Length: 165
Image 1 (cartoon, rainbow, N blue to C red):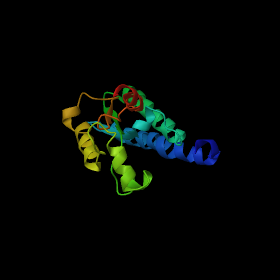
Image 2: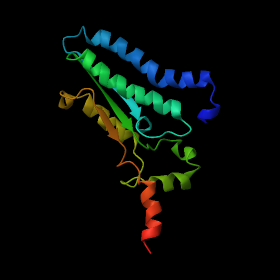
Image 3: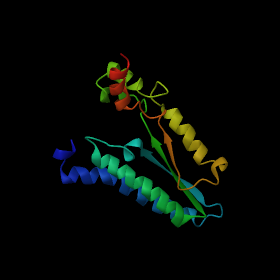
Image 4: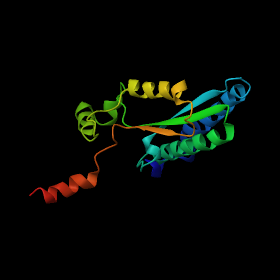
C-alpha cells in the first residue's frame, strides 16, 4: 500500500515506469533525428494513469507522467519523430489471475468489462503495429486507450439494487 511504501520503493517505481522511458526516448530520438525517415517511438502506459489507482498510486502517477511526456515530446521532436502511447486496460497474462485472487476472481473481474473479457497481449501488439505503421503517419502525441470499454461503473450496480424492484 502507498501509505507504507518507502521513499526508495516509490522512487524505483517512478524510475522504472517514467524516468527510464524518457531516457530511452532521448536516445532513440537522437538517432532518429539524424535519419532521413525519422522514426516512431511508442510508450506503453496504463489506464491507471487516468483513474484512481488505490494501493499503487506511484505507478499510476508515473504512467500519467509518461502520457504527458508522450504529448510534450511529440511536439518537441516533430516532424521527424512521431511519439505515441498505448494505455492498456485489463490484460490477461500468465499471472493475471493471481492478482485477482485466482481464476474465480479473474472471471468475476472480466465480467465487469463491457466486452466481457480481459484484453490479450495480441490486442496490444496489434495496436502497436498500427501506431508504428505508415497507416498512422499523421498520428503523434496520441494515447490509444485499449480497455474493452473500461469497466462497468460501480454506481450503476449500486443503483440497480434500488431500481429493479
